[in-house]
Length: 260
Image (cartoon, rainbow, N blue to C red; front, side, top):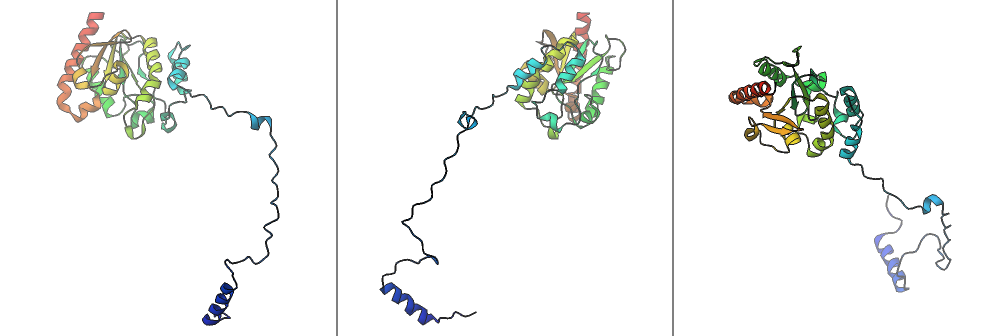
């Protein structure tokens, strides 16, 4: 649609307004700039509005974990306390709490790292390919999780009871907050010997990593003799390391005879 004014007429009118002293465009309706603006009502002060905002106290998960296990005396109570612990984000993404397997009366307590996919599904530690290899390793020295006698049985747990996403390594803060549960676990089971499977277990219990240097050398933690060993998952990737694992099993067998 064409304009009612042609270009030259519109330009002439604009120049005429400029000659008259027009410096800016005006609104369609008149505006009285001398009229005072309306006063806004003052907000009504309430006790809630005047009260200072206090930030919520920061929660220390390690302190909460220590408080959670303070009165725990049995394995059932410990499992319930772990299930009720809501400060570890891993709990939200896991299917099951993986607590333990084997005989609590066993002389040997094995501490693994964290559940994998199979363990998360079944709610038991070491049930995948690595778990099958672990069973064969201890069967070679006439021990196992199904053995009826405490002298031949083993008890298995993990540093973490919940599976990390994509089987990533546990974070230092996750290990720290679940440390009090692991310590109470050891205190209740009271094994003669502890076996640490892999780097994460060594980090959690001994505060050190470097399983190739630590394995085969007896340590002490929780007042117990501790033997670091290659994780079965590592042995599946590096079959050549099974010779060292066999030497560690023989050393474990000798230690048990010594402590008998």
